[in-house]
Image 1 (tube, rainbow over the protein chains, first blue to last red):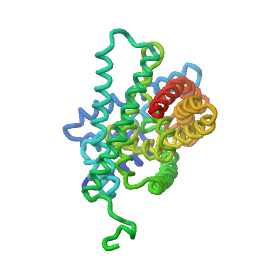
Image 2 (cartoon, rainbow over the protein chains, first blue to last red):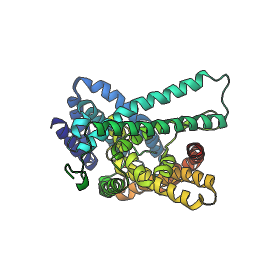
Image 3 (cartoon, chains in turn red, yellow):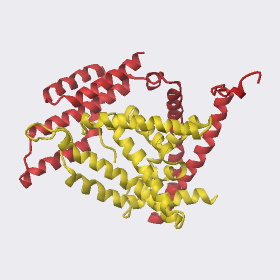
Image 4 (cartoon, helix red, strand yellow):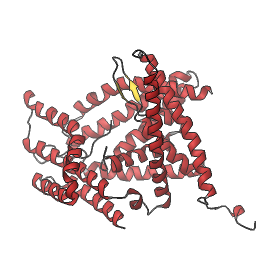
Length: 192
Length: 209
């Protein structure tokens, strides 16, 4: 319940943060989120800064450069948009640190099973992909040509597809053997 | 090509959520109709696969590389609705678990990448593949990169007109269409060539066996 409430609170906070256009209110919101993050606030704050820095910098510098071409440039806008972007990412990282995503999605049995399966599959897929990359690195003596690099990427992707098909069949069998799939057709009912 | 959180107005992302929700409901019905009880594990594994495919490096001349999207490959093999569902799930997990992308931009990114990209890829493939199979695959990959980029550029470029103060000062993304369309489309038209090539190679390899 706590996780679902946190998710709902997050959704409301996100809409509020994009509906308020006063930088002082947004700064107050940022302070509030930092308080909620507690002792993790500096870590989350740094992560959030790294996440937004590149895109925000590109947009801000591009916008400020408009002044060179005689366009009206507002410092208020730069402050407003940068605080908002930082607040939203800080909020998301804080939520991610506080919430158990599986419990939050438990209102739907299928959705929570789906997310559980996805999260459990991402790790082996990533490991497999990294293994393939390292294996390819360790077996080459020279820098690969563009064509060879494409063939290598394609071969890795094909292997991942094979693995995905195999894993999907395995998981379906495992779920069936544990009674996950309920018989819904009348001809599957007991006694028919 | 993800739009980061904070650059889209509520006037944009709230209707986009309504539109995307319709798409998600339709996709769920379509998938339930087409696929048997293996749907749930298949969807999960393909979502994990798409998550990792998005980390496959697309080599560029000069030794550099960028991330592939894999949308063209998924669309040609599994069709637009499964691709839309899978890409939406990937974006949701990236937003909630990794903090990448974001919850306000989720429906726009999902509609642009998952639906726009995959429908364009399927159309391009079906149009060309009967006569030129490889050209169809290449078009699928290229369109899967370029069409979402165009949609994202349009949505971003409309922000100054949609949400601004009375004095015209923007409240969200500051640049109009004259900036966003060339800035987003030109690099993606070039990157799309790599995505198209990867789609040709992967799908051809898969079908050869």
